Structure formats: structure tokens, C-alpha cells
Amino acid sequence: MADPELSYFELQAYIGTTKHMGGLETTKELIELCRISRDSYVLDVGCGVGATACYLARKIGCRVVGVDLRQSMIARAEERARREGAGDRVEFKVADAQHLPFADALFDAVLCESVATFIADKQRVVNECARVTKPGGYVGFNEEVWIKTPPPGPLVEFVRRTWDIESDVPSAEAWVKMLQEAGLKDIEVRIYEFDARRESTQVRRYHWRDMWRMFYRTLLLYIRNPAFRKYMAERRRTPQGLFDYLGYGLFVGGK
Ligand SMILES: C[S@@+](CC[C@H](N)C(=O)[O-])C[C@H]1O[C@@H](n2cnc3c(N)ncnc32)[C@H](O)[C@@H]1O
Image 1: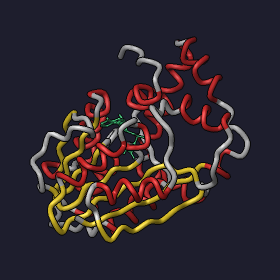
Image 2: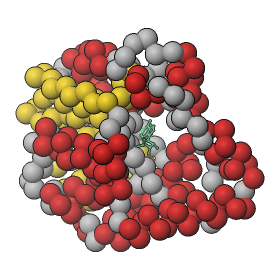
Image 3: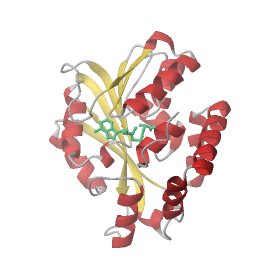
């Protein structure tokens, strides 16, 4: 396999892992808040390597469509669905969250876990998620927020550069305003600080064989690619106090 482009997401696709703050525990919470059941038809926007979409298909037993901007992510998600035997309950498609290729009012629930944060026109993403949701359905976001404001300039710069974020991370109030603007109602908000115990549930989204594959791919890349070693060295140190300022929130609205 050719070495990937040295960008945050292309590297993640190559290695075969994507994540959001709060790990599996937060995904379960979002599923509950969005009232997802076996009978639901669900869209996972910015599905990455497909961990949540496959979890929904396998554990809840609902039908799921996962979309991501990158073909490399969709290829990994399809591999995962085959490996996990998620069967015909899950399908994946390349699509931009800002222009979802679906009819209005198609899905019972739309999830978006740590995706809109990275996109400059966040309102457009929220509007699209609301548009494709059925009346009576739910739209649920798990997105980064500054929990203490204003964040110091070097932290803002670190977050943008390390995670290739196209614009600012919003405050909780700004996210709520975007959901209201998109016509969503009865908005529920849960704000979280970084918590090591909850973060450890990232691992539970993946099988131990996935972990081994990720480790092996990272190690190979590290050994044979000097540019990757430099990329990693520049991002190794998380600035002190980052997680006093950066947290995440669940924002769920009904249509
Ligand atoms: C932080 S990862 C989270 C992935 C997944 N939701 C998870 O929790 O594992 C963000 C994902 O959003 C995707 N993404 C970024 N911009 C996008 C866009 N405009 N449309 C669709 N997906 C996008 C990236 O390719 C990446 O897979």
C-alpha cells in the first residue's frame, strides 16, 4: 500500500482508526438521546472508518448509511462492515456533509460525531442534517467546544494545526444557536470535560485485532517514512492546560 498524504484524516484512514471525544460511552448516550431503535433508519455523517455505523447495525440491529468526504475512509468502513459481519444493514457512500445526497425527511435519526467542528460552514452541515431527518426524528451532534473562554491564542493555534480544523471551535451557545437556526426544537445539551476514564472507551469501539493492525501500520510507516516521523514529532506534545479549555458537547434536537 502506498504511503498516505500527511494530513490528519488521510493518516487516520491509512492507519484505520477515527475517534471522537468520549469514545463508545458517548456514542451510546447519543443513540439513546436520538431514540434509535431496531426499526430506525439512521444516517452517520462523517462516519470515518465506520465504527459507529457498524456498532448500530450489529448491536441495535437498525439500518444505517454512513457517509464520509474521503474515499479512503469509506474503503476502511466497508472492510470493517465485511469483517464484522454487519451484513446488508449497513452501507457506505462518499459524500460531503454540506451537500448530503439524500431526499428531504428520509432518516429517523442523523448522527454527526466530531465532524462539523472541522468544517468552516458548520451551519450548512447542521441544516443538511436537519433537512434529511423525518418530522418527529432526531439529529444528534457530538462536537468539540471551548468550555472556558476565551482560550489562549497558542491553544487555538495548536488545535487548528494538529487536527486540520478549517475554522474556530464554537462555544456551546453557538452550537445551540445553529441547531435552532436549522429549525430543530427541544434541544438537549450535555457538556463534558476531557475525562481519561471515558476516553479509554475509545478502545472498546475497536476489536483487539483492529488495534494490532493499527499498531503494525503505524510502526511500518514510522520506520520507513522520515516525513511521517517529523509530522509526529511536531505534534507529540499536547500543550499544558489544553483540556482546561477544550471539551465536547452532545447537542440533540428534534425535528
Ligand atoms: C474526527 S473524525 C470522526 C469520524 C467518526 N465520526 C468517528 O467518530 O469515528 C471526522 C471525520 O469527518 C470526515 N469529514 C471531514 N469533513 C467532512 C465533510 N465535509 N463531509 C463529510 N465528512 C467529512 C473526515 O474524513 C473524518 O472521517
